[in-house]
Image 1 (cartoon, rainbow, N blue to C red):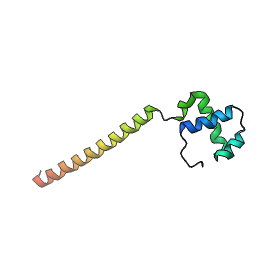
Image 2 (tube, one colour; image 1 turned 90 degrees about the horizontal axis):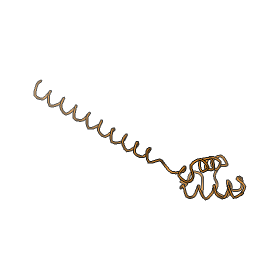
Image 3 (tube, rainbow, N blue to C red; image 1 turned 120 degrees about the vertical axis):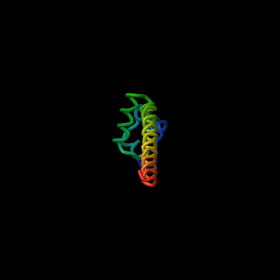
Image 4 (cartoon, rainbow, N blue to C red; image 1 turned 60 degrees about the vertical axis):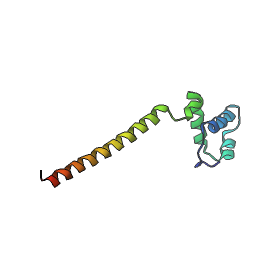
Length: 93
């Protein structure tokens, strides 16, 4: 799997566990075609948070969803304002 490919938390965990079992980081880097730096970051994240360290936090996905809704509401508000402005111009106000 190349670096540009998507790595699931499960696959990252498998690589980190191999590293923690004593496999050489350079060998793993070549085997999985990812950088030593990536594997080191995965290891650190795993040691700090376990497998959950690789997963997106529910808070960030909720925040993203809220931001999307706010954007939609802003667009709707702008459309309503323009509609009202056109109605006022047509009615001569």
